[in-house]
Length: 582
Image (cartoon, rainbow, N blue to C red; front, side, top):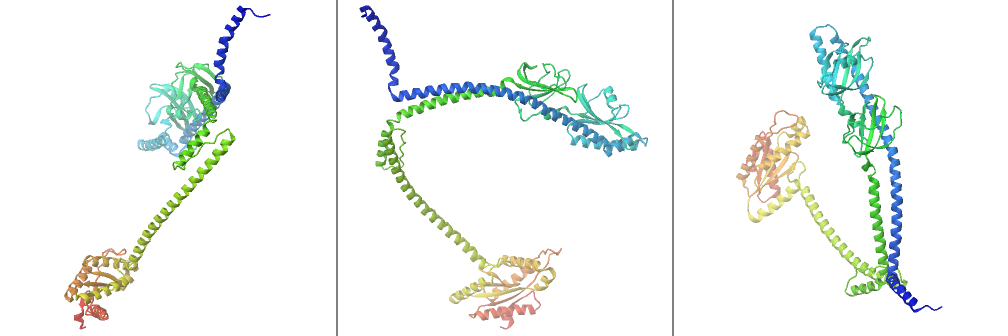
């Protein structure tokens, strides 16, 4: 049956707006990039939320199990450390009481040997106890009591102790540890041991006052770190000690565990009102209780932190996948633009051009790959040229550096070849070359030239008496002395052995005589300190001089004869060529 006009109008009204709404909703989905983006975004969001819920629940359960395991283990470890620490204190006081110094001093103080003997014994014991107190910072004071509990000697703090406590601890039959005792001005814990001589006679008792602060480091647990705290409470639940940097607690708010009961982890409010996670176990040695606590928020802070990180990671993943989907959609049209832009850049002279490879349209991908290979070859060719140029520059730089180094080495070698290694003067070779140059020069200029030979007197005797090391010292020092009185134009060389040669330019016979005498006096007046001689030694030289008269051999002959004449005249003198009759 056909619809009436009224029904048709109503149907048109109902379908018209709905169709427009559906068209608006479907408009984004008509585009492939839009569909990809929405699909990826929805899938990533759903997956991230599911992972966040499962991860949070699992981490919270895991953390609760870890705390249930960690707290009892921490208490067990702390109890073992504390028990070992107190066992060591008992061993300490037993060792102190059995020491020879303590037993002998206590024996002398108990005998009626006179006031002087007792005072010496007391001083010796005091020094020993002071040494012990210095080496063992766990103790505040060391006390020696007689059989009636009277204090005989104390080293350390002067905190007064009740007489009743002293009388009770003075009767100990073996080394022992006591609990915490309230005293005026604080609390005290004593480690006690009897002092017994080799015959079994009781000489008194030794007691160590344990420093309360020394227990604190024992309570520190590396696994708990600063997040947790360990407390020691007495039988009434009052806090005795607490781990370093822990929050103060006046007492333990829960019922104390029974001896031997396993540690249970509970949530409760501490004495300061903080919400904490804690556990307790009895410490059998003194009837104390060990308590471990951690702030509830800090204990489960990893859960909150994980939730925040998961949410941040999930949000990042959703955004990343949405962006990836958007980029993937745009990649359909981007390769063509990228290729055209790359071609334009290469045409402008650029070679460092890389076009991203598309993920769709295989033909465009092949074209892009070939384009990138062409661009890469251009870059490689340009890079090879640049590397070749840089290698040439480096090679040139190395050659310049090597040439400079070679020149420096040659200069050093040249200097070494003309220098005497012992005296640092010029050697015989340089002397000969220099003398030849000077003789050639004076032949041209007509200037005077003198040759002076210097020989150390009795050098062989000095060597035989004091050794070659002393002889080397004299050679070096004589060279320094003579060099200090020469002119700049004079050239002094070691001619050989203990003999020196001096080429004096622009020096006539009288000048040679004066210069020779100056050298002789300088050496004669100098003092030389030898290693095996207490008093400084004196050295003299004989000097022979001659002037150049145009004959090289004659110059050497005249100078040598003059030196021989000086030796013949008794040494320590100067002779010149005229005086020898040459």
